[in-house]
Length: 265
Image (cartoon, rainbow, N blue to C red; front, side, top):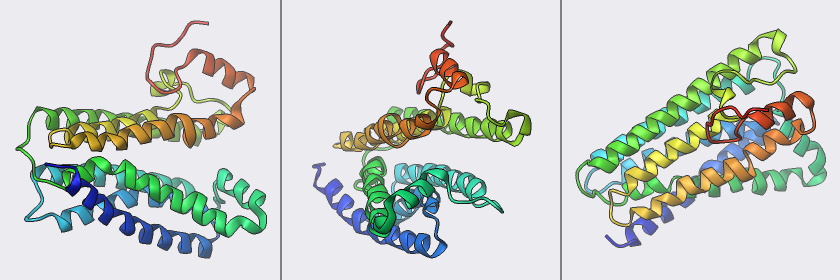
């Protein structure tokens, strides 16, 4: 298979995501809280997977069904987790978005449109590349790469879900207010949720390699790993904590991304 069918699939996904993100932008302006884009993130990948299932010709392959199911489980869990955290009674807009609302001033609306909603839409198109590849061709029957990819995905999903649950329990205890979570999975990596999310996309990328031209799908896991470690994940979360003694001690002994043994002081 040449790369043309993959590019054609990407060309059909891009306008779908564009319309989808415009709808969420309008909702955000009405609700006056841009943090709902974090809920839109996981649901957007589900929308893409459903679209690929609908346009599959002559019918979706077992590989695409499995990949779509994995995306649904991940996207639904993530959206529910964020919605329950951000939209609980009395919870105001996430501090990151609230700060942008203040600092952007009269440019708030256009910058929100382009720098938050459209930019995330672009990332969504590229990150979903493994599923797009699997929606572009039937390919051979399920094989070693598929089962290896599913295994990596399951590992990543459990890592993210357990890490999120551990953090939620920690934050629910008033005695922990102002302190750093450094137990459970958080003892071995400062961001088990980000590591787990990246692993899930690497699992889908491995599955895509079963198809000729499937290397194109590796764009997705490469991009999400880069975003989480260098752009919108770890840097944004850690910047406000820099310089605080408890944080600096935790940072000195704990890996940022990959789960590694605790470093001795």
